[in-house]
Image (cartoon, rainbow, N blue to C red; front, side, top):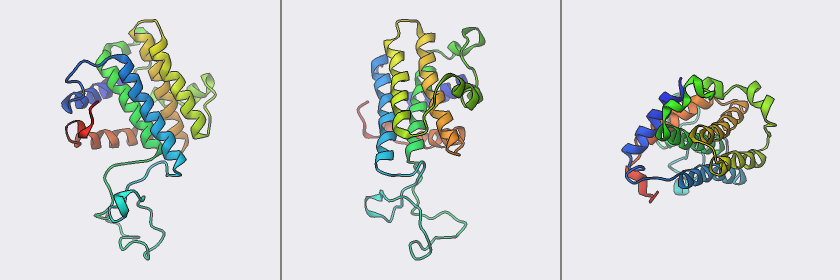
Length: 212
């Protein structure tokens, strides 16, 4: 899948949900990417799984759907999905994916043509998830706090860099690639999870109660 195609889809969905009704400047967009990385850290601090779905029968819907046996859940061991199992994916990996979705939104807004071969930027999603390429250029940490620190650092460069849009986008792509590869190394298909969260986002209400 081409990055430009996915970025276009993500940006169109963001526009449809009201996030671009007013002009948005790069500092705000970068801050929102930072917010997703920080939410991933908070998921780790809370001891939550990489990916989880809330149990609707639990108090405030904050307990992961992860029963140990049929004494905990009447749906345990059944093939069909429990009606109380939430549809929204949550967790450390999901928050990292949310950061990637925000980066794709910026790419879609800036100009998908930035990703043509002449710029030297990667053009397809598979290239972003190449472990050998990332690990050859970056010392990708295994622990979540260190990863988040590196993601914040790479993301900030997009704002601090005095170059053109292609150079700014490159820093964001680097952060996205690091996040995707880290998720992949945890045994999770990052593209499948990204598409799942994107599909969920399509069904969310207009701005879902947030100002920006």
